Length: 494
Image (cartoon, helix red, strand yellow):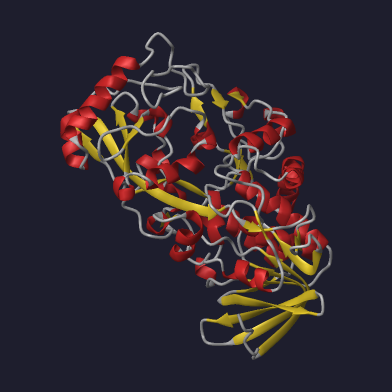
């Protein structure tokens, strides 16, 4: 697009576009090198934080177990009776390769998995507090001990809200100049190098930040319904947006306009089971509480009363980012998570007991179907067939892949509990899109590349705008980890 004539010109050594986790990490790293940093954020201060604000704050990192994490996380009286299995770099890499079906860029993946732990510890030294996420990644066992599962244990204190609040405090201390209400619209490229960012304000002001280096951290295109339909396919325009409504892809287009090339999978996205009654874009009060992620403990059906996924294929944090797309393909883009009185106490309170949760409760399966708008005959058949197929000889254990299966179609591979104890519960869910997987091509130093593979001088990328790490799915917590790792790299190199 044509660059607007600036009314306000500001100079810096580094300008960061986007005030989410990745952008702040880039700003911190550049400021620590003595660089003069300006961070421009499209949202007003009260609505800033990008998608990171709406997360649970979980960050996947390699580690050597509970003792290794003790100096990183806040004290907790439960830690003495907690088991956190080591999660190695090799396991992290294998999870990346498995969840993306081998479509993760090997060079970028190697940087992510090897630098995840140093990155988290670096951020902690700057003042970011972390904790063990008991309520999300562990179950309390009968002996009052806890076992963490799924390779994910550490998160920012107070989730995404706490993550962004701490980032803002760190940036202020490091004298990063924060500029809110400034929407970046174009890049300035003179000769061969990118040397600034044009922006417009909500008050009609137009400006330019001149800089030696530009770091792009402005998110993907998930908030633009037309782009979702164009790249992800018909139907995606109906998805609800879990986070900020401002990630409309405009800076992806701006980078392409100055010669950047695309990378990664532009046809898939991170999408989850999301409360069907949620607003069309993120709720800043409830944020991640609108997810419905205890589905491995029950069954999921469509309006015909039929199951369509293996709810127990793997731990939740290896499947949740892909099941939103499966829900979107169902009639009306809606599905229902079903539980009975025996499993209902195991559901995450922060999600299933949150204010205004969409919930139906009935003493019978047919009554539940009538309340929820599910075909009664279809649901009764599905539940009866499922209950008959559960391997009741295998003990139920939510902390491990227990092999308690149900030989139905599709199968349920683990955690198969019969739906037989009233009352019965149904939670309507739809597809909530988190972020798009396609982005810009960059090297391991987060330098943006052109179509020939050459570095575009002065231009860096991190966060959701970096393409090549994820495709079809991802391991939970690796998005914030990638933003941290490559944001830090971009800031150190800029």
